[in-house]
Image (cartoon, rainbow, N blue to C red):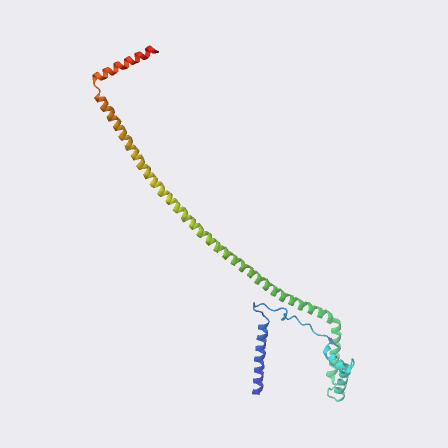
Length: 245
């Protein structure tokens, strides 16, 4: 008993490790499933049956050894053997079973196609809902990827905006520097203009005082006789000019 448990646990671990290896090999380095070598499983369809419940594989197994009639011969012979050897006793439950089997056969022939179509439709509906949910999840992930790309693009735009703000700050600093340099130039020019105007004013005052002093000195130096002689000479000169005209 212990050996069987050990063998079963070892087989379970081996199957789990094999499943993990197969799962790891089904994805590439990028984490995307290899759809070509490892396609996704699809919903299996039920196999064909004969007589309503016997699988087609049963008849194929006998066909290669006994031909077409082999499965039917085996079935009839087995039933005959069970009944003749009284392994299967035909009591009243047997006839009840025959009645139920007939009713099931009639119901299958009458209602089977419609029930099968309804069940197939329900299965297709459920499969469509599952696929739609999977597709919605994929679309949502794709939308998230697009939003992430837009967010990265906006982040890159924020870097450009920060760079532009830095350049604007540098331009503002340059403008402030130029403004202050112009203010310093204007102040120096104003003071130099003041000194120039002061020197010109002092020069003009000096010249005025010099002229006044010279005129005053000359005026004081003229005697009354010289003034009279000068006046007489001026009158004579005006008379001479008048006689010429």
